[in-house]
Length: 240
Length: 244
Image 1: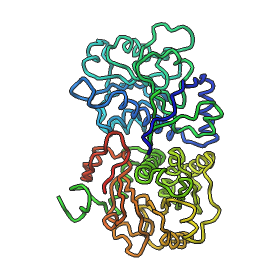
Image 2: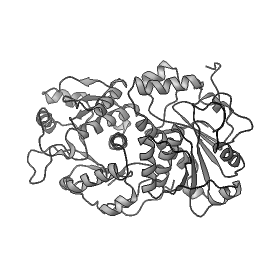
Image 3: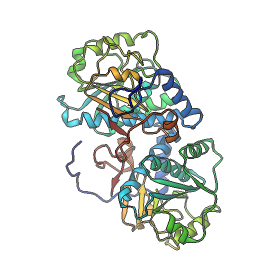
Image 4: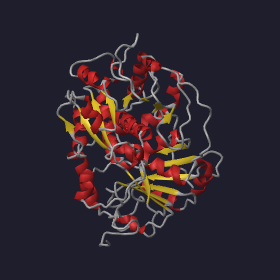
């Protein structure tokens, strides 16, 4: 594929939460994507973005450890798939998934991770130093676009994430970020937006922002005003 | 380490028999709880990625990078549908021929995804190899995979006869269609590219085309060990590995 530079990078168009939900609905109902298919696509793309943000040779710790914090809903499922692909890319993810969804789909994603020998923590240390010492980075797949604190134990997880020194990579929307003034938000170093960045992430100020939107059909890109965007080669993510 | 089932390619890489391939597939679904949807998506992505590496759009002599994707009735055809969609996203112009469509929701979904992305579905197969050579720069053979046994049923017999006379490159998904999964077929299709999924099958030992890729980067380490697949490492985050 061509290695020439793409067109100049334009600022992204931000989607409202309603628009993001409308797009997902259209992908599922009109385009007949399967939900598991979409989560697999998103989780894989997020893993690729994580490897671009934190390439294996650049990791400070001797072991390529990552902590993947997964919430009870779809964002957590994306985290599970992301962890599995990170494992196959040579990282050593550990998952913290305290409130497991009973949905068969999420249970299967969990089994797939377990069978890839990915450890699941039974509790998250409140002693933040222990996390800072053990892992190179944390993947935040707790709440995503689901807004504010969420049910326990999400609030407790966010409380710990706020205090970390190691970098956080948030999937789709940094957990706990809601419209309105930012207060006590976590500050991820890296954000991976899915189809398009969501409005609430406009205030993101971390060092790397990736878009994992290659899967969006052209017609939907036009309809929601989010494309086209150049992706290098056959990459499924692009740095914004 | 060269045993009876070792072949060309990285030392120790095993070439699977048909039963083994089926057993591994079954285990991925029953023990590891993968779904066909998931693995098909990853497999189809591998195929499109391999094609993009070996036949970049700029290499086509046709005015557009037009690709004909011929999909069979089973999972190999499903892999072809996923591949077609990713080829479209990579800037190719795929056209699909899918004469015997599965009514399972997965396949109907994949077909809809392609159609909604403006990938045309031909109502008839081109009658002459020359027409294919004229219109397309590459053919993707997604007709039969590793479960194939017995005689080739129509319309695929005629389709394969035509494809055997095509001069543009053919990329076969997993097994060159019409080949015995273990013994190959000396007078059958001679594809230019083979994308072996999960691990190569014994038929791949008879492959004489230019490009042999490994794809389907989803085999858990424990399963690789159980079957002593000796898969070489994929580069970085690539979902394909070029074997030859």
